[in-house]
Image (cartoon, rainbow, N blue to C red):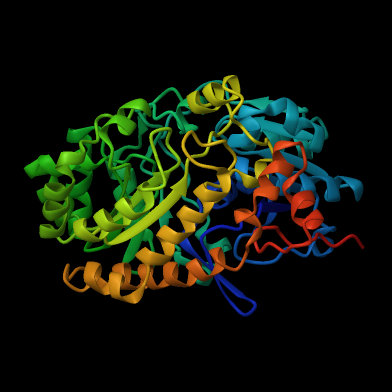
Length: 470
């Protein structure tokens, strides 16, 4: 049996040099994990194709027996397009991923089978049913799977050269917080942790010195976290992950975080307004703590990738300049900006739908890099214009040097990360359609992303390549 596992194109945070594409995010775990879950007795040939880093040639894989495609909201349109192609050619298609779990009725129109929920208990059963020609149209995860005795991801099947961080692992799943724009509370009601010894054992098998734990909120259980860090310390690895900012106040936790080899953390600051943080249910972030906390992280040798969101209801056009100024003042090592995006069935989505402020449900625009709402205090095009201006100002070489050289942290992380975003800014500015009022008028009147771009006679690097139809 031949299985093709596809990550559909999200067309975001990728560095393109000629025909070569490198993601400056960590390697995704979805497909390597699915590959690891394939029962060995099936003797399956497995190929993983991440369309975010390598162009897909669909006819090349028409000799595969089963096509499985993972879809996030921002990649759902593309995933459906790929699924439809293979079904037209008589192939069996399975769709899964977070968007499929949220909107299974939508997804089932494009697949022979859909997977709702996490895959650990479902995927091996589905494959055996497929071999026995009794595969069902839908498989639901019976509960939130426990995270013990998981097979290791098949990293040997990924194109590691295409990722800035090819070694990624999972340590936890879910998040106890309920930020209004986040999909995690929609699909997962439980915060689960893997056994510490199993995590350390997997890290020990990784090739190279560096790895990332790409969970949405790693450090929620203090005692479990310290136990993990103590087991990582002897491995002499260098790693990064995601955490809530307030952990800087815990001296013992920070001590062991440093000893474990942690060199960077991604933190969702989101806003410089305490009122805005409260309205999105993230009041545990305290703006008055930002400066002190940054110093503590830096004193422990940990760089911070700080995420900020534009488009909150309180935001005016002053927010862009104010944020850039504070980002430089706080010495956020690698800033990252997003546009307030109402992912399906989140608290934000439901509120804005009720307020008639959602411009479009064309999921290809739901990537936090495009405006899909009517902001409270500016036009959609002004929000996009301010968003890309903030990126441009933040990643000028003078700004980069002031933030990174003085901090004296791990330069492969800080400098290379900033350089990648400096190049990414040029991509943001290569497409003018998203600062045109007519674009938002058209998508607000029901035109798709692709239709609006075409009818305006403009181009967009954000639209994926046309699928081969031969």
